[in-house]
Length: 282
Ligand code: PAF
Image (cartoon, rainbow, N blue to C red; front, side, top):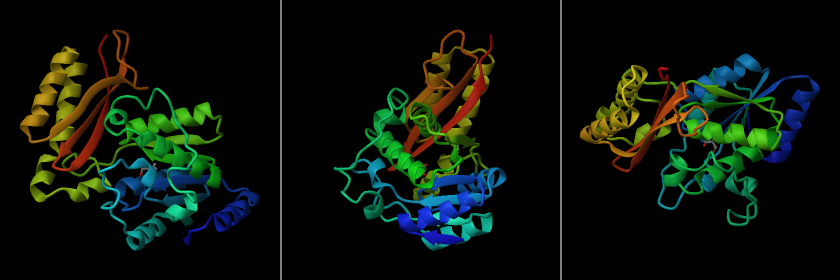
């Protein structure tokens, strides 16, 4: 696997692949790779001859006081894992390569509506940073398809909307959440948890599962959500939101059948998110 840091080299290698008629799949990441990321590479591998991963801890998507500086940078281990997973090319640019004029002067992509509420409410500007860097990576790599984890459900919805609105000829593949044996969704941020916090963290998924079962059996949504909120608090998790939405993140109505439960909690200074799809009864 080759690791490239600059744009002209990336364009040259990808141009050669395109001339050979290869399909190109993109897996954008911020590094510190776990099995959830490797599932993205596997999904890409199944669909394309050339798998390109990117590692870039994108400062534009971190708010003031968030974990930009603490975010784990583990390039060498990540390179070995990507290579073993069958990735051909890693693009790992510096911040000055992607944002040569600095962050303030950077042209941005702003996706409306789907960025409002949920994580968008508690992390202002976060999704503008995500759509800007993903839009830039799409433009640099010009992949046929790109793979994103369903754990970041709202992020996936934002990217789908951006691709639709900008008429980008890129297939977006959502890859199911990979969980630890106790149900906790894998995330680079799980590494911030103390032993005690790690022991409480699976309560997030357990609460979503209980809520799904109640909602699927027809229990009133607002009562169930209130109980779920109390369960999270009782386990020492500080809920930011716990919501039931349609699959495209609109408020549910009486005619909604396919829906998604979404939650974000704080455990100390670590923010965890998770979601679960469900089918509401008639
Ligand atoms: O999900 C992530 O790791 C990031 O938000 C992404 C999509 C790589 C953009 O920086």
